[in-house]
Image (cartoon, rainbow, N blue to C red; front, side, top):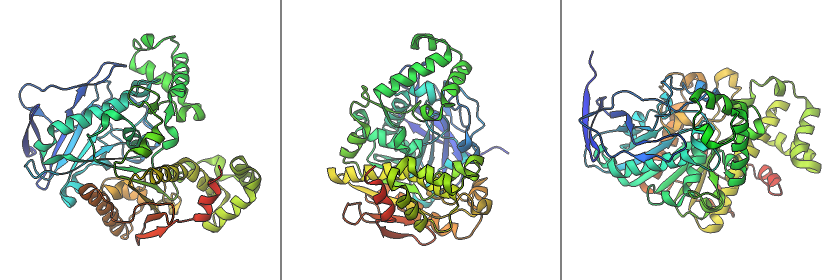
Amino acid sequence: MTSATTTAVTPFGPVRGLDRATTAVFKGIRYATSDRFEQPVLVEGWDGELDATTYRAQCFQTPGVMERTLGGSTLEMSEDCLFLNIYTPACDDALRPVLFWIHGGAFVNGSGATPWYDGSSLATRANVVVVTINYRLGAFGYLGDLNLGAHDQIAALRWVHEAIASFGGDPDNVTVFGESAGGSAVVSLLAAPSANGLFHRAWAMSPSIAQLRNAERGEQTEAQFLAAAGVSSREQAAALSPEAMLAAQNELLRDVGAGFSGFSPTSGTDLIPLSIRTAAAANPTPLVLGTTRDEMQLFTTFNPELASLDDAGVERFFSNRFGNSAAQAITRYREHRPGATPALLASALQTDETFRVPAWRLAEARDAMGSQTWMYWFTWASTAFGGALGSCHAMDIPFAFHNLHRKGVDQFTGDGTDRVAVADSFADALTTFAREGVAPWPTYDLATRPTLRVDTETIVAHDPEQPVRELWSHI
């Protein structure tokens, strides 16, 4: 059976997409071209009608746990990967809010075509336009000080600014949102002067802010990559096969400490001249920041080393972070995680250290600068795997997209009926923010620290887990 199609007439030429009755979907639209280690060049147009009925290639990568968990794309890999996808209720002149999604994957994995990122449900439910993009990853996108992945994101935003009105979207009301590395990319765009005016609100889900680095760190990791690749210069690396590039990249990533910031947005560069955290704090663009309660349980639940951790191991673990205050820290964490095993206590500490504390500190810095900020805390816990995942990293993605029906979601979240109310409230909060530029709960301030706690009952909590937060205030 032939799928129904629809056509949008854009400044770049006509585009043929899929007509799904309640939404029109345009897949694999090229927004730019690029050569290795070169900045993207925005497309000027195309001859004839562009076929946008199938997804196009994703960036070269080695799929990770997140991609397998999220039903990652099985599309071909190519360095020619700068494509975007659009989900819209109609190609008319309605000027709907635009939600521009930047996928996660530690800046080394992922694709805008991942099934969980299908924007049809959000577009239909809230009368918005959703855009998902590919950008260059790993050594292809973030070698040294190049920031090419960030340049790609800005090029995609420029394309959206030029063309999204042809798809029923408002170029003057664009919300960038993303999760994990995508959330961190959102933060980095707040620090990039050339992105100013291309988006108007920002929503960062579990941003991996600790990955963001300076030019010195970028130079160090480039040297590590070149050594792993067996070459002595960026020019020689430009001649490597994509497979050799990936092999060297994977060698660097084996060192967990080095790998975490091996490839990521870099400050002290032409694109991002100032500290990313400082510049993002000063940017007055309205920002929502959020984390999940049990981020690290996605990565630690099935880790045999942590599974065997005992009380003595927990004491050593906490001592590494809190020194002489370790006993007090363990007591406070036990109070807020009653019945937690040693492994879960260690995971809770890692969750806060890696995600929650950096988010708190960015929110605090923005409050000091008078930049409007809202915080949420996603605490709804999965029932899958006997509840072992809790409210882990990426748990909020299918709720934000209102995609509980997508393949594999119930294997991650469980299939409880209470999920629907959580998805309703969370997706509605996101799209209300996109539409109005104001989140539907109080802004964050240091006096009361209002935080939207997203759960079966979604409420505004003031300074949730204050004793835990105070532990980190001196670290």
